[in-house]
Image (cartoon, rainbow, N blue to C red; front, side):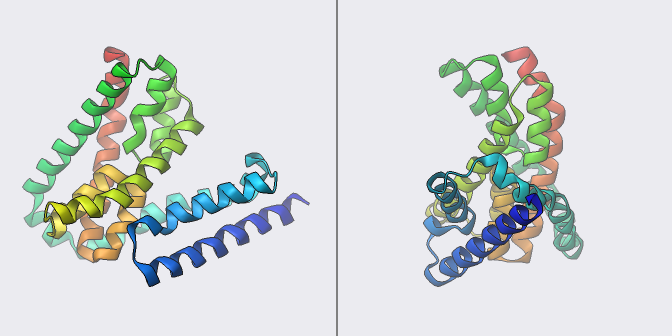
Length: 228
């Protein structure tokens, strides 16, 4: 029985996402980002059908397992854009350094001002890291891994929604700036958004997401230990 439930929820998620992506391609509104709208519709579906999250994850788990291969597949645009990455290596690392520092400092300031408990602080701070690493950071620092994953998805959706608006307002159009901003701030979901701009933006977003995740994994546990 669980096999059929798994197949049902995989199929349901897939169909909803295809429909939301088609709607997004027709309307092209940032508010209709397919990841955000699919997530919202799935939440409403589970609430009104009285289906628990654990039941959904019988199928959702298989979709989650595809995250690893999807991240590895991002090496494809990196390879074809390697010359441009080398040319812009200095502004790339400057942008990454400033983005990572702002992410850590703003997160620490927020948890201090909000007076969050150590457990919730350790859960909130990895919000700008891709889900698997964020869950590991939360686990080793006393946070809640499942909630950390949800916050990562939420921050990615917000970044993919607001990021393009801010870049348009500040007239940021170069593929380096677009890629670094989306990859560093909105990780995987931001990289998916960067792919809509072009292969160059996707390559810089991919490498930004990868390097920032590595730095966060090394630095953030020490920050949580010494500053919280």
